[in-house]
Length: 263
Ligand code: PGA
Image (cartoon, rainbow, N blue to C red):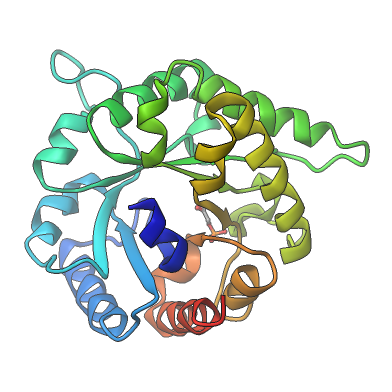
């Protein structure tokens, strides 16, 4: 529930197309679950490849470490080879799905497709982790227009009652570890997150916008994670590379947990 999320910070692990075997996924999930069981201020969402979700779902107990999908299709069922529907995800009792990730957008996913997916997933009762963010940071602030356009397009068709299942992640493409040109910083994230809330207020009303979690993603590791929470005001983090390295990921969760205890 959003009010709980205000207190509990979300740490979303985006495993992308990793690890190479289900045995590795099981081992990683088990270690993360054990580590996170001691962190009362954090909920960890492991977004594993679809192929592993069913097996991993048998290990989920309680709410501290749960599962999410990395994408889903906008139809409920039918002749759509290779796609996975929100209904199928929900049938495994999985509540979260990432949508609009920049790596999907760069494979050709248009704003309109993101919008249909967001609408389908929210209507199915899933919590949607919607990613927005510019590819390049320009000096005259055009990136704000990009973020606004992505939000407005993704959310143009959503009845207000579904908004409380929305989580927005600001993930500037230039800060993602695989092609990072420079680092984002918590103060800048804070100003972008205020802008995001303003746009959300325009779409869903001020009251709803104030309740929606806004996360940060892009080269988050155990060194900077806590600072995004304490100084950046992030409601959580979306973590790629560092979520695959248990020796980084557990200290990262701990630093978020520590930072959350002071917010
Ligand atoms: P990164 O990836 O943490 O490796 O930068 C984040 C993401 O792409 O979701």
